[in-house]
Length: 418
Image (cartoon, rainbow, N blue to C red; front, side, top):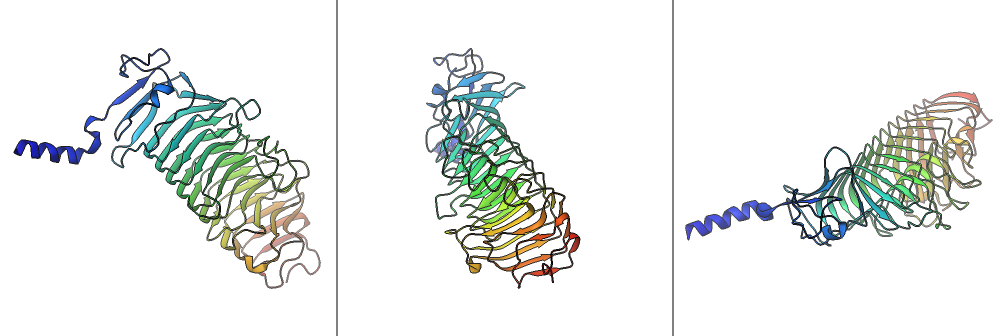
């Protein structure tokens, strides 16, 4: 009896990891094997049938390509101490070729680590109409050292998930975005997301999206508690198939407590005649968020977009500080390093912005452009350096805007500053 009790206690302490195992997959394997390294499985279809549990590891042969979609059973969960790991064995990445479908889909899953994988789609104009890696209603997911390309929607799509860590993901040649995170409309039901050390490059646009923006680098919406740090975005948005609101390198909308830190966004594009194509943007409905210690240069839209659109939740208590904009706003309606716009026409919906300790250098346009629709209140600009060979300001700041201790070099239009 004592032995039985001790065994039960041992099993409780060990949890489900007492029988954790490793599964191996090889291009030369067989699905009727036993999944050991000596007799590996072969296909993702076989992988999708596995009853993965805490502590299990799936090893994919390095350098091999596995066709299809990796989709573990809904509800697959590891634990904090013993996550499920999916990674190659060998020195190279393993490739998952989703073709016209997604490469990996995790649904209602938790405590899963995805490491050192190359995810490929058929191409945004060549048959693929999906996202590459989908995290749908998941918690505690790590995605580390992934390459994601060839998907019409987002390379990495995070939906209604939390405690997600994304590190060293290179998302390129996708349609809608390199990396996108969002919750359901009107919520902040995607939370505690960290995107660190990632690159979003050459994500041109979604050819099927004729009603809204596409071609973003990194974009988050309906989220809260998000950190985007040490990331770069470049050459995105050059093939957006519509004229209107355009893509941005790194930005957020309808979210709370988003921090964009130590990032670089440069040479992003937009459709001919469209707006945006900018470096960074705190867009409609943003609250308690910041862009800090970032560099933006040579974007077709503004370096920093400060925007509120009609129908968004109130925009309030946001800041941009300790950043540099160099020759942004070259093509779009912005024509400035900083572009301020509010289509709600209600200043109470667009208030409390602090813009400080920044350098805005522009030899092609203005430092700041206040759009014709720019009603706002409680904006403060201080300790900045504004350097242009054009007008320093375009449009008209609100008479109550505060300008303190700024350095201005350029052609000052009459009555712009007081």
